[in-house]
Each structure stands twice: as structure tokens, then as C-alpha cells.
Image (cartoon, rainbow, N blue to C red; front, side):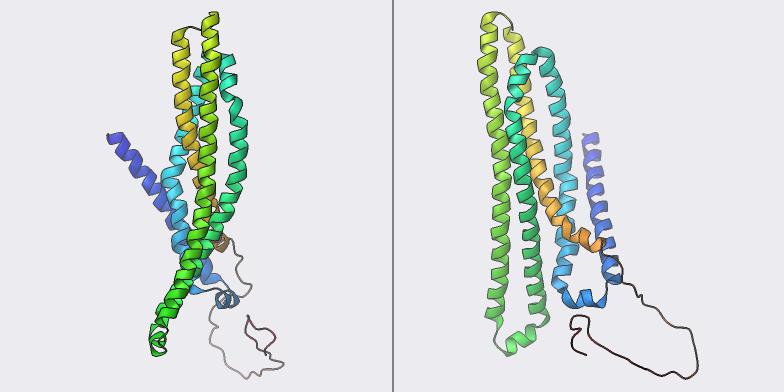
Length: 279
């Protein structure tokens, strides 16, 4: 029990450390970003990247990555035991796996794209809420509270619809792996039963092989779930990682030393970064 508690503590601390590091580095990158970037980006969207996107990656580190790693180890151990019992039955058991792997890879790409759309929709909702709360007195002067609520609800519904689609793809991955494992179990029973009748395999060996197949199926389901969540996290973390990977502006901020003398402005031109045509 003590080791389990210690493991949970270590995993949680790892997730918190990853999340804190991402937030700190993303915020530092925002502080160094150009004025043009801040003029074009909504404050609520940037806050969403610092909070929701980093939290999505933290959740994967603390939960799904550990379950996936444990599933990989268990699948490897069960596979070795199954090969030692009956190589022929092991080939029969793994015959349905290539289709499940192809389905997982195909759906994983869609999950990643949809989760990115979910995070963008949530960021748009956060930006809408930030704008409304920042100007709530103005909204009340013009009796526009209901309009602001409707606009926010529209953003939230868009995020929900995208999340529902991502969840559908994740369910397809889990159901595909489950179908593959059930087909594998039926194949093992059919071929293994015939081997028992032919005397090539004993009842005890078939029972042990079937038990290992059940363990393998359970852990393969855990791997499928972890893979789907990892693809979701990849889509969610792209936006916060994009902040960290932004190159700093060519010009920095600072103060000039004390100086005296005459100076004059010549051929001076000014324009806002987001409106270069207006001088």
C-alpha cells in the first residue's frame, strides 16, 4: 500500500511539474512576443492556452501514459507465455491485430485533428467570455446581456460538437480493438479445441493459453484507450507548444543610458503592426 501511494505521488508530481514548466515557458514566450502578435490574438484565447491546453497534457502524463505503459508490459509478458505454450495458437490469436492497429492509426489522426478543433473552440469561448466580462457595464448600458450570453452559448456548443466527434472516433478505436480481441478468443477456442481433440494440446495448456489471451485482451484495451487519449493530448498541446516555439522578435525592450545632445527625426514613418497600410 505504501509503494502504491508513493507511485501515485510521484506520478502526480511529474504531471504537475510538466504542466508548470509548460505554463512558465509559454508565458515567458508571450512576454517576448511582438506587439503585432498581441494585437491580433485575443486575451481569452491566450489564457485558454495557458490553462486548458496545459491541463490536458498533464492529465495524460498522470493517468493514461502510465496505464498505457503498464498495458504494453503486460501484453509483452502474455505474448511470451502464449508463444511458449503454443506458437500456432499464438499466430491464430494475433491474426486479427493488424486490422485493429490500422484502425487505431487512422482514427488517431482524426482524433488529433478534432481535439485541436475542440481546443480552438474552447479558446474562442474563453475569448468571448473575457470580452463580455471586461465590458459588462457597457453591455448593461445597451441591454445586450442576452446577446452576449447567446454568443457565448454558440461558442460552447461548437466546442461540445467537436468534442462529441472526437469522442466518437475514440470509441471507434476501443470498439475495433474489442472486436479484434473477441474474434481472437473465438479463433483460439476453435483451433485450440481441435488441437485438444487431436492430442496436440492438453486441457490445462488450453486453459492457460485462454487465460493469457484474456489478460492480453484486457491490457490491449487499456493500450487502445491510452493511445486515443495521447492523440487527444497531442492535438491539445499543439497550441501551447506553438507559443513556446515562437521565435522572439528581432527588437527587444530596454532603457537607454543617460545621454545629452541634439537629435532630430527624419523620414519617420509609423503604422500599427496589424494595419501596415494605414500610416
